[in-house]
Image 1: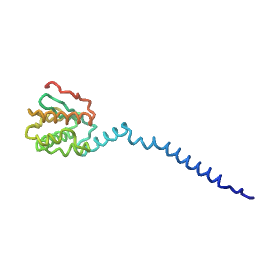
Image 2: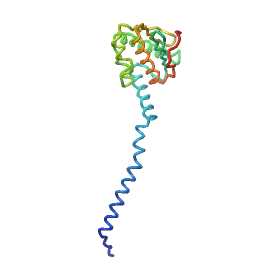
Image 3: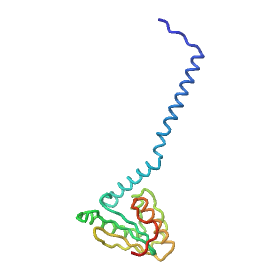
Length: 183
């Protein structure tokens, strides 16, 4: 059996076909590669990271607790409660964490939220600089604890509110982003 010889015209046509096929395959693969940049994927991945780093940094499971961040006229509040009051160990862990947070923030140490959120939250640099004008008061509440934040410094107040709004978004709490009446 003899194989027909193919000339230069056939080789040129084959090369064109290969280049065309490669271009089609690359074009088809681009949407798949772009999915990693999809806002829905990156948001879900980021929130999963916040939850995992939060459990590690705070010492309790984020899925068995509820966080609230409240903006108030003179500051705000950070509240965490156990979803089940019978979870004594969870309540203890929440209280230990928030006691630590109140003391650390008063010293200008915001390393834990920077770790949990994998970035420097808005307001942190100003709160560090203005730490002497902000009070961070730890309080126990049923099934958890809170940190009451107060300041009369307008720049510090804006920083506290920026920080709390960021927390609301990143923890996906659904809390109001507007300043609430004192309650």
